Length: 137
Image (cartoon, rainbow, N blue to C red):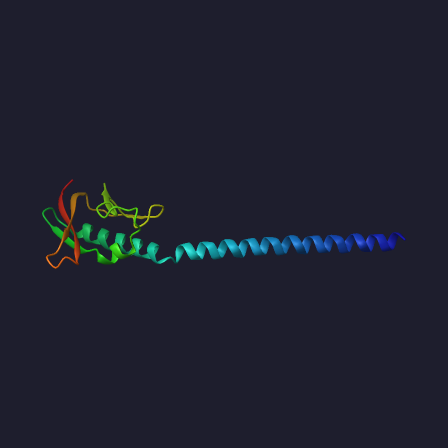
């Protein structure tokens, strides 16, 4: 009798261990898919690419430089709660591109400059340009 009860205890432990392992594996895979979805979103990659490109431009800019950027692609991805003028902000030596309320990508540049920005609409009315005027910090 003792042998049978010992076998049933072992099989219960084996079953419990497998169920716990399966639950942990499913939770890990679910977290992995959520992470991959958030990283691969189009908005995130546009924010990152735009911030890095503008940072490279600002690093090579000298005082008095005027940089004009076509922002139609950004406006197409922009959420309704984000203001056009505030979707790109420059604070100190960090540029932030924010296309949605709860997102945004910040990137630093080395050049110590000050920049004023304004949005212009070209005469055709369709193309919007972000105009950055570079000044000394």
